[in-house]
Image (cartoon, rainbow, N blue to C red; front, side, top):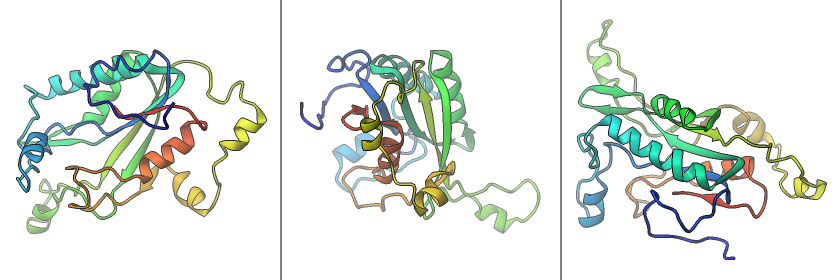
Length: 230
């Protein structure tokens, strides 16, 4: 079996994957309104960063329902009992309204069978949504809107035995991750400081920093297990 495979198909029906075949999913779903993926795909240099584009969804609840259908049905199906799903998602600004996507999505996924396992805050260090300017211009109560410098890494677990159960000593030894200064001072905490990929560094409109999946794969899988990004 190859070490990786790419399927150019819809994640709404992943028939290439058997039930219970995936140990970990790591994914950052399409933004509801921040990226116009069609413009980015069709127009080289076209302006695709917008906060008034709702990616074909009639509204916020439909967007959540689509995420629930993919993560709560197909991803849940292909995940083995005891396996994990890590979803990187942030709150959303739309026409001066602030939508709590991570919290609403968590409620939906728990309702369909996932266990909420852990949340990690991704601090972007060098990038974010700048909102504090009005608070500087009008330093009075009621004008304060902080810069948004974080997203959430929501980790869900499919009910089942612990992934360490039944493992041999040699299996555990092969999967041992280094407990070094980086682990103690950074990875062991539930706030991870990872700079995003700079604009223009990739052909993708919102490239993902490799450090996030690297850490999650080391922490939540054993060697030779299947990892999915739908």
